[in-house]
Length: 451
Ligand SMILES: *[C@@H]1O[C@H](CO)[C@@H](O)[C@H](O)[C@H]1NC(C)=O
Ligand SMILES: *[C@@H]1O[C@H](CO)[C@@H](O)[C@H](O)[C@H]1NC(C)=O
Image (cartoon, rainbow, N blue to C red; front, side, top):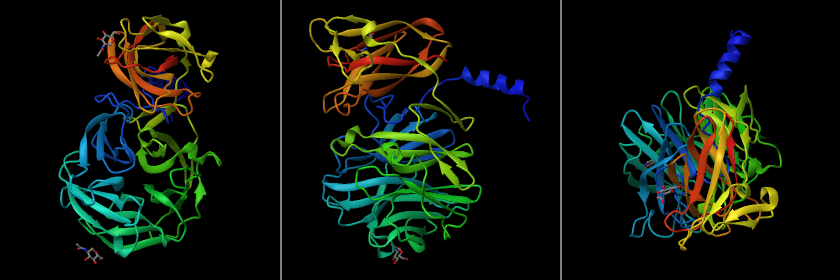
């Protein structure tokens, strides 16, 4: 047992650590591409202290483009590593106008191969198959091995699960019969037998195990639109499974998201979901939130931002923040105040960037932080275009390109995450300027952690 004083000291030590944040629903700019992370319908696989995020590239809409891989050691800053599979010029499962969704990876100890399963379909979702690909490197080039209907049944949304004894399982949505768990062969390359069938209509399956209990997550069937997702528990994959129950606030449509993966963190787990924007899929965002697990009871609160600590296996709610307004900062060049009804104070600063004679800039001076730390600034902005905008954002002289996805309705500001080193005291400077002559977003304000 810690004494109360030891606990306080521990808390104080924790408070001075980095407060890098996961911001559900925000633009997540990859560290090396300067564009929004394209890893939708994703799964994660962990190799020692590195996490690999594998998901769909939706840059150009719904048809298959790439299965992308990003890496991170903190779950917050993601670096694009490469495409594991890309569209082929020739007709076939990976050819033009194909559906390749929800890629998931597990590693096979016996063969030394990473095995990927993905949903393979035609553009009208009439084929309903799984595809399998393998590689000896987690984020290397994958060899596509073909597709089939598992045990002859339809398969659309899928997940993979590797149990502690090394057995592999396919989670598959069979529209005619329900949601299935099927056993995989020892090399994971085929499906051998059915393990369980829910006759309920549930898709987007993801399975997590803790202390001998299996937790199955999934969504109802409402297309790209979100619904109140559900979970069920059992002590054997063959059941009996408990009745489906909600875990997020009822009526919130799982905070406007759909399950794609459940990531273990410490002795808890993180929910990974997609907030699909069906009219412009590249601007779909990621809703990642910590789960609270108490025995067989699972719940999930919503958070604007939160900080994972992967080394400790813990998480904390977002720090308190100051929120300097753009209209109180210093515009330069062509940048001017613009009306913005959804913005705080009803104002933003627009015409940042551009390739005019004097490109617009916006300088926030005297930005304060209680400690010197690596942290996340949330930029509140508007972007009325249908494409991303970009800005060069420099913090204490270190600049990076930040992406800004289109905002929902031209009225509600969006958020973009910026991960930076802050100095202690009121001496930080944040400068927005053009990235390659482009116009940046209209900036409403920046949200800066106090500690
Ligand atoms: C995969 O398993 C199914 C069912 O057990 C079997 O019918 C099929 O031949 C297997 N496919 C391969 C390539 O081994
Ligand atoms: C970004 O802006 C900073 C000044 O704020 C400037 O020094 C740097 O050259 C700019 N970088 C690019 C790529 O434009």
